[in-house]
Image (tube, rainbow, N blue to C red; front, side):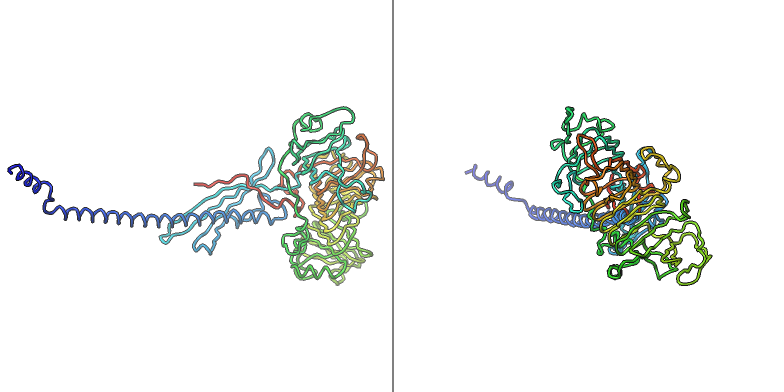
Length: 560
């Protein structure tokens, strides 16, 4: 009995909670909940603030990216890659993007030329920022460099090295799809690329890097009738100079679509650029007006030019300089013949005096001096019209050029046709004649040549059967549908076709035939790369000559 009493005493004094314990537990629980609530509110506020900062930082980043796009867009709209002095001061200013409230960005564009490779890159540095209510800023900075990718870097380029399916190439029946070969008579003075397979007979000379999109399993095809056999990957072929300067299996390089030559809906098409201030409806009106030569301008004769030279209808064109027969004048002169009408357009860089009996813009003007920086247009007799300024260097013809030649092309110009161009004689740079007349094209000092010419045909580029025995063409040539070829390739025996520039074509066209590496008909090829084109920002590219149209980023980094 006494033992049970001791148990009850222990239970009452040790197991049953003492007075106040429930209240203490409640207070502790409330404290814990309050602490958790405050922590949760603090975390929420921090998350909101962090989210706001991240949003502001993201906006600042995209503002900085907008600066990069602004610079690249400006570059893409230039007629040729700008030099260091061509970047406008406006790029160093501040630009506001109103859709992002107080967001702004700065952009700086500069030119950097590698002293060894002479490859030009454009360095773009941008900063985007968002201004907060307390006037503090959220900023992001980007530095990137871009280079222009262009076709002018190639002495020779083709999409396919097989005979094209082209009804304009006479005598092609039975040849379509046949392989076209580089032979021992061929010299390629610069870089060569094809998206197809290379076919080589004998030992042509390749002085630049040779690339093909066909991989090592597709192989270079050598015609080894004389018993010499080369590795299918070309590793021991002596014609690749210097040794090993070739590569198989590179990426395909797509040709530009020829729609951008004459797409009226594209303001960047060559047709629209030549039209200057003309819009789509203006050009459509010209297309129904019959053959004629136009210099798009502000408000008629005497006003300023706004574009290039626009020719409606087929024409014959001669490139020359002004001056009497047998002499070289200071001004570029383009003679355009359409039927019985002859138009001569002179880019006046040094003043000239109109002859007696002349009329200028409908008024007697014999003895009148035409000042420099003027475009002068002469029609029948001594009838002239003048326009302030020099055209933008682009001549567009809505039709074919049936004859193109010229022994003295001066300046920088691009001629584009939405049909074909027939070359009937030499096309020589004036500075090549003046400084190095008689020098073989292989031995020219390119530093002495100041002129450049781009020829673009939406269809074919043709060496006419009337062309001389030996012919030299100083130009970057592009034939987009389909080829550059000699139209008497199968029948006439000619000498050498020398090209100073580059050749870009969709499908390789024929300029002659051979047997066992020996020429039978047509021309031997002597294709020399114009090394000035290796530096796109050097100022020598023909204006508006189609590049890939893109500036490629070579590096990108965020600056902290």
